[in-house]
Image (cartoon, rainbow, N blue to C red):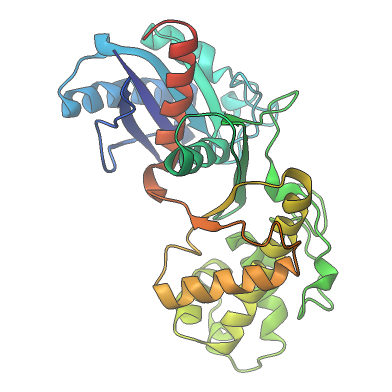
Amino acid sequence: MLVAGIDLGGTAVNYTLLNNDEKFLIEGLCEHPARSTEGPGICLAQIADGLKIAVDKAGVSLGDVAVVGLDTPGPASATGVLSAKGSTNFVHADWASFDMCGNLSRILGKPVLYLNDGNAAALWGHFHLFGAGKGTTSISCIIGTGHGGGIIMDGSVVKGRKGFGGELGHVLIPWHMIPGTEGMEPLCNCGRVGDLESLCSLTSIRRHTLPHFLKAYPGHELGKIEDPHKAAYAVRTLAEKGDPMCRDIFRVQARALGLFFDQMVNTFDPDAFIVGGGVVETGDEFRNWFLEEVHIGMGVQREEQADIPIHIMPNGDTAGARGAAIEALRFARESNLM
């Protein structure tokens, strides 16, 4: 028997399969169009069609799949009921308060377990480092358009009372301590000022840090690009090449992440931090520079805690599907389905 992991994004679904020996039967990307903008009915049919393609690719059958793990962008409850305002990336009105797990389970005829996409990636990163055993804790941050993440404690995802545990991007940080932020007012889409996502995300670059630093670098080439999205996307490429302004922008991100990690050191005393997303899917020189800036942002740690490592999220494109599969395997074992 197997479990399936399904990572539902705004435009594509990614699949993996995991057996009881904790071996993944699909190594790379196995994608299928999501069509989430057309509403739940079409999107869930797409998920089911893509799962058939995935099991065929792995040389197994749907009957071999005991449990399905699903992850999506939030906000959603611990049981996979999307927020009354819908999901971040699913714009169709019918997604509001939609029961992802219940409806997908009826279509597939199998139990469906839910994680938000940040928690799923965090679970995979933890599993890659420590395996499925208990007794370890890790904190993961995935820096993308927004800022996802998750907390794995004693080998399990911290979901919280309503399923919103691990919303790390919306933790407030003492951002005024970050050099170069004087005069900024980093407002997050959630309505908070100075949370991690408002300083450490692609959205932050577009809305806050790029406009802010262009004032200090008059005549910079990015100031000549009229489309703010296009200009924000160009920041990382220039930062990798050593552009001073773009390095200043990513220094703010790194220092913000360091301040957050310092809070987590004193809250959880974790075994590891894990960083994922485009900011670390770069060349070695820029990645090492960024992580060193994170360490600087963390400040001076206790001697006993100074050796907490910062790891890079493995298999970034497939991390969500793999984490969803690991959650499904846990459930299958506890329920004696495997």
